[in-house]
Amino acid sequence: MRKRNNSLTADQESIVTANSNTPLDSSSNLKYEHKKTEVDLGTEVLYHPVDTDSKKTTKRKIRRNGLFSRLKKLLVWVIGLYIAIPFIIKLCPAIQAKLVFLNFVRMPYFIDLKKPQDQGLNHTCNFYLQPEEGLNIGVWHTVPEALQREAQGKEQSWFESTLDSSHHIILYLHGNAGTRGGDHRVQLYKVLSSLGYHVVTFDYRGWGDSDGSPSEGGMTADAIFMYDWVKKRSRSHPLYIWGHSLGTGVASNLARHLSERGSPPDALILESPFTNIREEAKSHPFSVIYRNLPGFDWFFLDPITASGIRFANDENVKRISCPLLILHAEDDTVVPFHLGKKLYTIAASSPSLREHKVQFIPFQKALGYRHKFIYRSPELPHILRDFLSTSESRA
Image 1 (cartoon, rainbow, N blue to C red):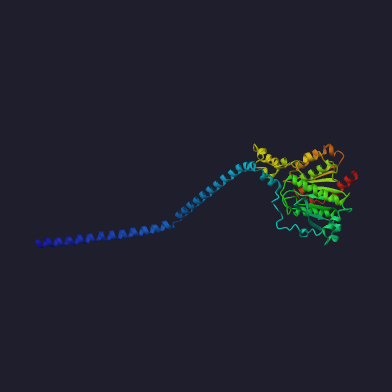
Image 2: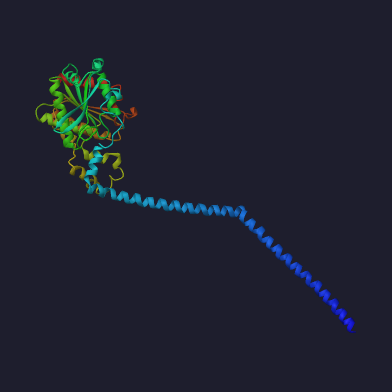
């Protein structure tokens, strides 16, 4: 009996052991399969396209948030600057004066004003004069095209001597920014020279290679000096004043001064003129973002007046006594056409101009002459000859 029990016990133990081996092996295999599944799943998670898109979407959101944050900061800076500018200009009127003159903007760059021939003006002489002691201003004198060959290699004294000839003379007063060598100005000199005129032009104090600092009084003083200098050498020959843009303010100041002293010019030509500097500043495209806001005059226009800048063409035309020609393009965006038209209306009703020819010539928008390309008009020679000949016959 003991043996059988022992045998059974041994068999049972064998069965138990066999049975116990099976679950142990199975457990081991399950663990291995589970680990393998985790690895496979991990691989699937890493390369699964849905999860990749998710990461890309997250990155895009981060970038978008970063861009939005930068734009937000930029917007704050822009708004802050927009609010600050009026106060800065009000506290520093000199800034507004610089924006009116723009004499620090020199175009074209790298031009040698001592060599007008580089600009195609090989019948032009460059020299310097002193309206005041210690103050030099740069001057160009272009002779009529008929004297072009004779002018080659000649000195300043020869150019001066030609002013006392049968050819009429135009004293040209340029606008703000740039120099006497600006391209549109050079092109006008060529046109006028081809029509038989002497052209004398210069850079006001503070412009180009002229000494000093700009101011309305200084610009007018330079113009008076230059007019007298030319008139002394031209004697009784006709001398006309031509002003462009801001130069129209200088030209009308000069013409008024000459009229009040009893020696008015033979004619005044205003190209792209305005009524006065306050109305021009308010109409200028740069002022569009502020002009309709309360306090615009106080912030922006009063500092101009406080700097002694008026350029009151509308007041001057009531005091001048010489023929007046106004040229203006309808598509002028710098000095709007309506200001030139308004100035003409004031001049036409001026008692001091009642006995003189006052003419307004508009140039249609379709021509595209804008602010400084009226010299391109094929009608300009006829306009000048007609106006100036009529003016001379009435003088």
